[in-house]
Amino acid sequence: MAEIGKGVTAGKLAINVQKKFTRAQEKVLQKLGKADETRDAAFEETVGSFNKQMVEGAKLQKDLKAYLLAVKTMHDASRRLQECLAEMYDPEWFGKEEVDSMVEDTDANWTDYYEKLTDESLLSLDTYLSQFPDIKARLAKRERKMVDFDSARHHFASIQKGKKKDEAKIAKAEEELGRAQKVFEELNVELQDELPVLWDSRVGVYVNTFQNLASNQEKFHRDMGKLSQNLNDVMTKLDEQRLDKKNGSASVKPEEASSSEGANHSVAGDSQPAKRLCPPPSRPPARMSLTPSPGPEDDESPETAPTSTTSVTSTSPISTPQNAVTNGDGDLPEGFLYKVKVLHDYAATDGDELELKTGDMVLVMAFDSPDEQDDGWLVGVKESHWLQHKDISIKGVFPENFTQKV
Image (tube, rainbow, N blue to C red):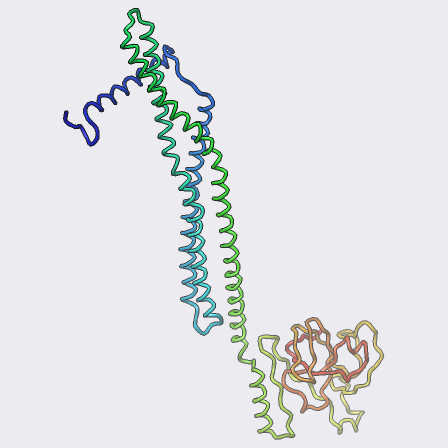
């Protein structure tokens, strides 16, 4: 007889059709209660666990793929953002090489994170889920073979109960029953052994999946944290560079200051003291120079000398309260002009300068000679030192625009 299809003859096709009809008939009889059905409550519970396990595994796989897709999307967004930074970062800015390196390292970190999640979590989960279709197909086959077994069992019982005993039919029915029972029981035993093992294996799969996910996340965020901190440091330095350039019109490096002082000496001669450089103008602007102390000719005519405290040059200490020096409504000790409060730290760069900290109070006095006064500089004594020692020998000069009169 001609073949219907590859490997399928008309005879096999007829047998398959007959089996389907017999199974359908058997199922109808079972539902109508006219035929009993082989039941295994323990096995059915195992099948229920398998179905639950398969659904959970499929959901985990779907959500993990969605997470990986989100990681890839974030990677693409991060790469574009980092490339944007690298493109607009001027070569003369601080940390250009560091920024370019961080862009590459950030991209490599995202790539490594995505690949490790795929290899260590998703692929192992895919392997775990790949066995479910085969188990599901074997469960369906067991269901069919169980119906075949029930049908053969009912057929054999009906022949035995017949009025006419046909030994040949009985023997054939018994043979078909034995064959159906053997196929069903072999498949049933295999599944009874495999399903509990598969059910228990889910714990290891979940542990492996989420443990790898957690460890890779921890490493990724740790490395990204370092890169982010480095980028923040570079941005901080860049901002400081911007401020330095902004203040650069009045800021001079030490070596430039030395050359400037040398130039002053060469122009004015050794008898002319070198002028100090004013502090950066970004700090409070320089005030007008103080009125110099009166000359010797003024001292000879005390009756005509000004009475304002701004012209007093005496360095004799006087008695004052121990906890403060008055100003404003009160009187300052003799020899001092007024009091100022320090607004910015100042690090002394010369031996005759005062080291100032924000919040210090300084008692200002007049310079001994007008030639000693540089534009934007004052001379005075820290209030704390004055209260403790009553000694003006510890006086020093300081930038006026680092202070505010009180």
